[in-house]
Amino acid sequence: MFHEARKHALCLAIIVQISHVNAETEPVPVVGITTGIDQTTGKVPPRMNINTLEQDGGPKWDLLIRGLDVLQNKPEDDERSHFAVAGIHGMPYISYNGVGPVSGGSGGGYCPHQSPQLISWHRAYLVLYEQLLSTEVQRLALEYTGDEASAYRAASEELRLPFWDWASDSSLPPSTTRENITVNGPDGKIELHNPLYNYRWQTYPMNETQFPGQGATGPTTTRNIDKDLQNTNGLLRDSVASIEIWSCILRRDRRMMASMAGSGSSFEAPHNVIHNLVGGSFVSLDLTAFDSLFLLHHCNLDRLAAMWTASHSDDAIQTQPFSSQGLYSTAKGENITADSPLKPFYQADGKTFHTGRTVATTETFGYTYPDIPGPDQGRTKDVITQINQLYGGFSAAKRSTEVPTARREWFVDIQVDRADLPLPCSIEVYLRDQLAGRTLLLNMPKTGLAHDELSLSRVTNRLDTNHSTTKFVERTLKNDLHVQVLKQQDHAGDSFRGDYYYARRERARVLVVDAHGVTFRAENARYGRTTGGTGS
Image 1 (cartoon, helix red, strand yellow):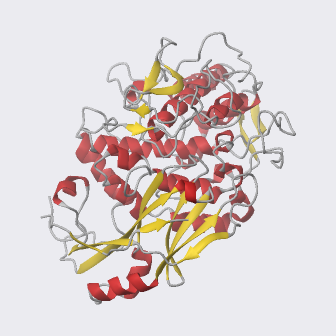
Image 2 (tube, rainbow, N blue to C red):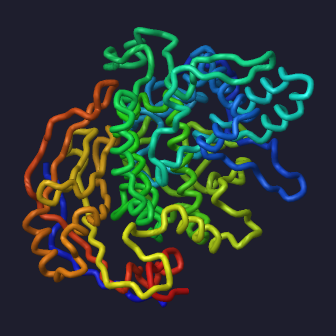
C-alpha cells in the first residue's frame, strides 16, 4: 500500500539575484529509416547502448565507425555532411533547407533550449542524422563480398544511432576516448581516425565570419574530460545521480519533464551537467554538435523521454503553450504549442514542417530502444519495471518486502533568472563545506527563469536524519545551506576552471518527504515504487 507522503516546506527559495552553400536544390526531409523493420510484426530495430555495440563488435560496429567517418569527411557545403547537420544546432548561423532567419529572431542557432520543444526538436535532428548515416552504411555494406556480404547488408539495414546511458553509467564510453580506431573493411582491417573521438575542422583557422569569437578554438573539437579521464568520470558519476533521473521520471507534466522552463526537476538539468563536465567545445551550444559524442548524449536524452512517454501514455505531446525566447528562425514571444514548427525539419513532402505532434513516437521514424516494449505488450507496466531496475528510486531505499524504517528525503528547489547570471555557469548548493548538489546552465537562452530540484540526500544522510528531529534538520539547513555560482567557459578552454561570480548564503526552499520508506503522493504511485512495506 502506498502511503501519502508528508512534505514540510521551509520558507527557503534559492532565488539568485544576481548558409551553407546548398548542395541540394530540394530540402532534405526528415523521414527516418524504413529498412530493418520486421514486415510481419512491424517491430522496429532499437538504438543500442554504445558500449554494448562496441563489445558485440562485428558488422554493425564496423559500419557505424566507417559511416561516421564518411559523413565527417564530406565537403562542408554538402547539406548531407556532418558539418552541415551539426551546424543546424549552433554555428554557423546560416540557413539549412532554405529556412532563413525571421524578424524578431535571436540571430543564433535553430535549437531551442529551456523550452518544451527541447526533446521534440532534438528528436527530429537525430533522425535526420540517423537517416543520412543509414544511407552511407548501406552503401558501404555493398563493398563486402563473399561469406561476409549478407551479414553486412543485414547489419546496414538494422543499424541505428547508439546512445550513451550516462544516467546509469556516466563513465565516458571507452570507444570515444581513443584517437584512432581499427575496424574490418572489405579487404581486411583498416585503421581510421576515430570519428567518435573528435571532429577535425576542414577549414582551419576557422572562418571568422562563420564562427565569430571562436578564434582560439583548435584544429579539432575538444573535451576537457580527456585531460583527466579518471578524475572527471568521478565528477560525472557524482553529478548525474540516478535519484535526479528518478525525480524526472515522476513528473506527470510533460513540460516539467522536458525542460528547465517548468518548476521542479527535468531531464534538461542532467543533460546540462553532461555538457558542462565534458567541457571544452562540448560546453558551447554553438560548437557541441560537431563532436559525435553529442549524438550519443542526445540519443540517451531521447531514450529517457521515450521511456517517460511510454509510462505516461496520456501525455505524449505538449499541452500548454510557451512563449519562445527567440531562435534563428523563430521570433521572440512567438506562442509555442504542440503544432508549432520544428525548424528547419521538413516532413516527407518537403514543404510541411515537423511539429511536436508529428515526432511524438519513435516508431514513426523506424527505431525504438531496448528498454521500451512493443505497442502490443504491457507497455506502461513493463516500462515502469525497467525504469525501476535501471534508476530505481532513492539510493538508501529498501528493495525488499521487509518492513522499512522511517526515513526522510530532502530536496532544494532552485529558481534563477538567467539574465542575472554569467552564462554558462554552475549553481552549487553546499551544506557547510560539503557539496550537496549542483545544476548547470548552458550559454543559451540568455533570458528567462530556469528551475531545478536537487536531492540533498548526500549531505542530510550524514546528519543521521533517521534519529534527528525534523526541526533539527530544518534548523541545520536554514543556518548552513548556501549557494555559489561558478562561471564556466563556453569555448574550447578549460571549463573546470572559473571564478565564483556569486558566493553567499541564500534562502532556499527545502521539501521533506517523510513516510514508511520513501513513497510518493497517491497520484504518482503507479509511476513510482515504494521502497519498503507493501504496495501495488
